[in-house]
Image (cartoon, rainbow, N blue to C red; front, top):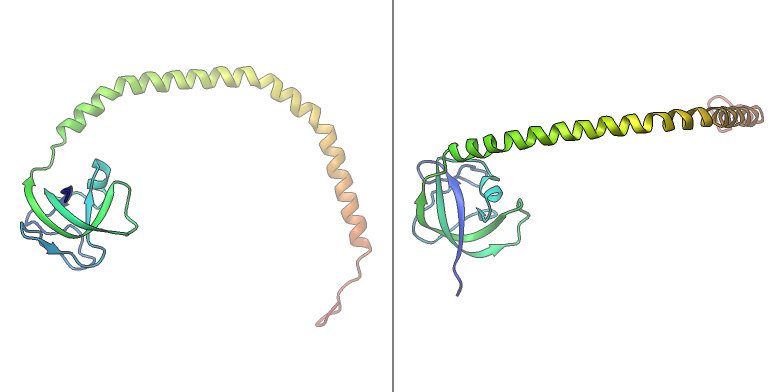
Amino acid sequence: MKRIIGYKYLRADGSSINDEHGRVKYTRRWQTIPGNGAYVGATWDGLCAGGVGEIIAELECREDLPVDAPDGVTCYRDVRVVRWLEPPTAEPQRVYYAALAEPQRVYNAALAESQRVYNAATAEPQRVYCAAMAEPQRVYYAATAEAFISMMRGCKPAKRGGKP
C-alpha cells in the first residue's frame, strides 16, 4: 500500500484553522475527520488555500474524498500527523521578490515602449478608417431611423385598460 503524504497549516495547539465542521485537533493517531474531511495541500498554493497557521503538520492520509477543493488540495477522511514543521519565514519571499524587482521594472518599461510604438503606428490608419466610415454610418443610421419612424406611423394605439 502506497503512503500518501500531504501538508496542512494548523493553529499553534495543533487544531484546524477553520471550524466550519467543528475544530479538529490533529494527533499522531489515525483519526476520522468530519464533514469534507481534512483539506490537505499537495502544493504550496494548496497548503495556503485555507489560510496560514502557526505550524505545519506533515500528514499521512488515506481514503481521499470526491470533494470540490481548491487547486493543489485533496480532501481525506482519515489522517494522522507524521511530524510537526515550522512554517517558512518571510525572508525567502522577500529575497525572491527583491530578485524579481529589476527584471519586472525592465519588462514594464519595454511593454510601455512597445505600446507607445504600436499606438503611434496605428493612429493614422485608425483616423483614416474612422473618417472613411463616418458618411456610410451616418447614412445607415438616418435610413434606420426613417424606417423606424415610418413603421411606428402604421401602428394603431392600444386601448386603455384592455387588449390592443
